[in-house]
Amino acid sequence: WTLSRKTFETKELRFLHGSCPFFGGRSTFWSSWSPRPSLDLMRDFPESMKETASHEQFWTEAQELLNVTPASQIKDGVFDTLQTAIDRILERSVHNIPTADYAESAPLAVGRRSPTSRLRFNKFSVPGPLLGILERQRHLSKTNQGAPLEIMVDCAATSMAKGDDDDFVRVIETSKGTLSWTGNKTRIILCAGAIPNATMLLNSFESCRDSVGKRLTGHFVTHISARCPVENIKGWKKEDTLQMAAAYVAGRDPKTGLQYHVSVTAMNSPNPQDDEEDAARECPDYAAAATLDQLVGSEDYVVFVCSALGEFTEANPQNNIKLNKGADPTCNVTLQYTLTPSDYSCWDVMDAATYDTIKEMAGGDEHASDIEWWDETTHSWTKTKPAVDTIRIPGVVHESSTAFMGPKEEGGSVDELYRPHGIENVHVTGNALFPTAGSWNPTLTMCGYAQDLARRLFDLKGRAGCEASG
Image 1 (cartoon, rainbow, N blue to C red):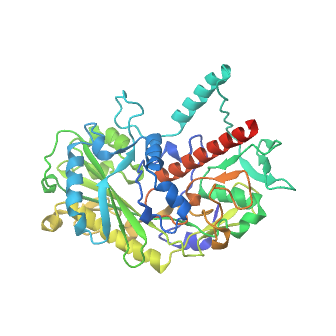
Image 2 (image 1 turned 90 degrees about the vertical axis):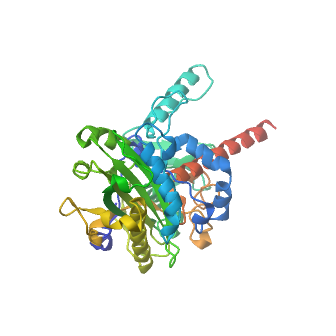
């Protein structure tokens, strides 16, 4: 996509993080944080989406797909005694963080793939399981017990066309030619992300241009690193080996209602040079991992790396994507993010909550003077909190809301069956569907709604079969 000048010149934003369209997508390199939002955090979601998410099955099936495990249950020798201590501290002291709602052991998509697996920390990624399904279906098709799964690589889908006398799509244009069929049974699922999904709809259907891309939300990011002496961690005694902990603290800006959360990674490395590889492998969020220069000299400290995410308000028409005159239909859009006073207010609250979270873990008010902060400009520890412009990290993440579910008269782009209004057999997945971004990492919720779509389409197919046989 093309960035607008306003976005590029906003020093706290600058750009939106992209992704390379490799097989497996973003799952090949991601943070694994998979929190479950409560229904009250799904602000302005339509009742149909809330009703779907109110069933326990919605969450358990998504958690099973991603192997989501609380960090407290990993117990691999690395996530162990420090994890227990950090969980206990935050549970008891979260009320000391004025705007925080709750704290929990971080839910991470790193669980065992099978009951007998010896791997206790195994981050979920799409290629392995998907290729497993491909192989399974190949064998089933040989005995006429199933259909083969076919995957086309190095192929870009560019646009779709519906019939001239109905609302069914039967043509997809691709970089390898035109794909066409007859009949009404084929369904197209758009699952390439909030921006590519919207780009495809804008290029394909004039009727979508009234709503698609008119709303754009996402998350802004703060990174703060600190350390405290190991003896200041209440109820914990230093081990001889690498210890890590991951926690999740969520809250809201009382003035705007906008949400934030703090992803905490805590680490004590007695042997930084030897621990470096294990620390990198087991750190949930590689973008917010402790670096070797932070760990060397911190053998008798616990290092905290906090990545905090806050949500952009949805009430900002300046945030949008629009078609431009680019020749490549896979990216012929201009994207714009700007910051409103509400966004800045939430960002300030989030930064304060991040500092408070670190203070509570590091022993509370009585030991606050022992905390040292990482200065990114000098690459050293200091007693002075870092400047705001060094902790607010450019690059928007978790872009959302480009084709949100809701009535067309309220700006919505898709109906309760995830279809763009007026199109019968195209369905949208991912956080393009979310009317608001919340602050929670969207992966678990996205998977839940994708599985809901799969169940609905399976039920529709079953009913059609019954009607045909009847």
